[in-house]
Image 1 (tube, rainbow, N blue to C red):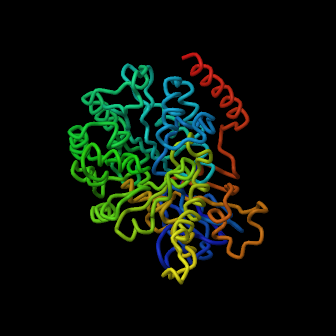
Image 2 (image 1 turned 90 degrees about the vertical axis):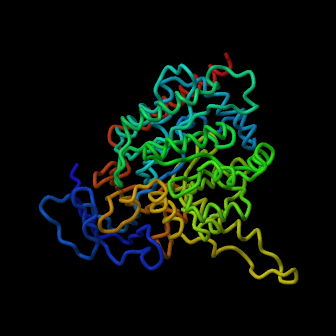
Image 3 (image 1 turned 180 degrees about the horizontal axis):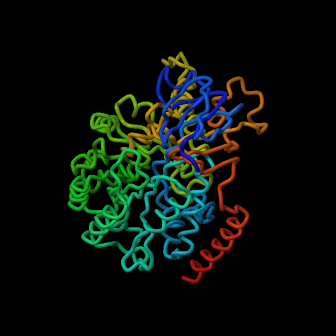
Length: 476
């Protein structure tokens, strides 16, 4: 479809920008060659433009998801891990099932996860893909890039993996065995040559992403991986400080905090972002802020696993770059960006509210409703994601930015009665009807439909795949 588009008559446009620029005083958006060229009132259509009537609709920048594990889309609600905290959950669900994946069900899981995200208005996905073991029979990276390309989505492969294993992986099967460091680095270089585009509007990127800085590699290898990443011109990503276990582990093994350990091994900086950062010491926040390291905030997964709530407000005030990720569906049964941003909005307020004390005990405030606004959350989930990923041409409705735009029609009763419909897609939860989703000006979702996607057939395939995975695990 044409990437010259005129969006007309929007009820409101939220831009992803901060302060007074968070809302555009406009109704129309003109897109030329996939880039926003004009924002205004009563713009006149040109001959080569496709017209999208956004009357009664809310327009946002398309979401940017900065942390996912797409293979887990077939592990939602898995009962062995449903009521477990992080470490036992890892053993109960992702580690137990990973060897049951083959190319076919891995591809299906990726497709399900990408479609779920797409239907929430998400255009860019960074997947922390750590499903690697020696002598694998399929190339997960190739599958992930292929599935994203078929849907017209931007895809960032965070090439995970482990060269060192946790103690809970004793007596491990082949699917849990560690890679050799040299082979891991060689594969990163291979992927960079094939897929990595350094442009600010790239559709494909590769990132150095050992699964965890503390558990999945040695200190020397961690430092070497940072050096190699920067020589290749790619970014760095890992899990960090999701639970108190990270604090205990770093203290026991290295006599320092997790963030201090990362800083000592060159794993902080403007080209680094960490998933979670729930359990941080004040001095760790200072290090992260001073180095402008980023975060992928994953509130629903952190809530589901009982890990806690990251202090996003304090992190941003310190100078940390904030973005939002949905994490894997095995610890987040609603792995879409509308659900995630809704949770982020509520949980930052709840976190601050939990700190309130009565006046007689020295308290100074009643609750935390001022902790995060809807505009803050939209900025974190759009422009913040672009900044963390280094995709500088994305993330905002602004002249010169790539036209990654979600248009929501709020025609469900959950949105009826809103005094300000602009906040609906975040404040009211659920999944809004997606009138259109544009990526680089091309319409990839129209009237809430994705071309060539049969959701009923996808559901049938998912049910069958879950049965196969269960049978393989039981037989192992």
